[in-house]
Length: 248
Image 1: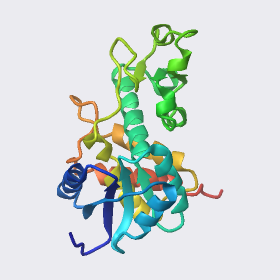
Image 2: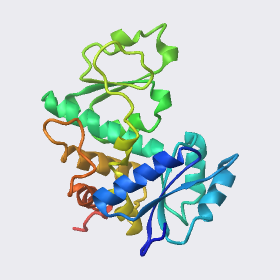
Image 3: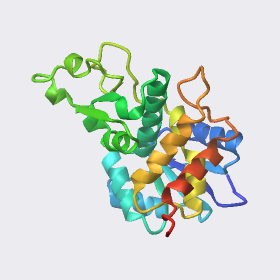
């Protein structure tokens, strides 16, 4: 696939047909020129090298289906040359938005909310992002905690439970579907192309999550990729989050 302007590359180590479907969905709904590439790598250094070899038209990479630690390491190695968004980051953004939306519909303000993250070790970016997003009480629970702190007790009186490990017997948010992870990408793509990365990724992720909360239809748990305001709202939120404070 050829592009007439710099585009977004969805890159993974398997699932070419799924990545192509994701690329089509983003381009059809948002107009962002998007393509898919399969790479093979044994470690982060090889992954970074593979990303460097992508066509010059690639402006931003979305890494999907790659072991999280390897994806993070490759992202760090390319910090100064090629913006990389990991699937782990997208999942944390989308789950944070889902938590805030559910809390709002329960008429609980974020600072009054108690959120339990079951399997927090599987989602290390989620807990700090929830805290940064203003959630008053965030409880990180791991399977190793079960003996001394049963999940059903820890989750008592929780506003929202996020269950990454299938341990909670009740209503809970679960890791988002692959298609839902695409929601932050059009706005993030626009922001990164403009150099609006900021010094702290948490600021950008928080801005993305809050933007998504403003777009969710009343009968849906999250916004839709087809929303015409999606990319603009996320871009504007990021620009505001990374803007230097005004001098008095």
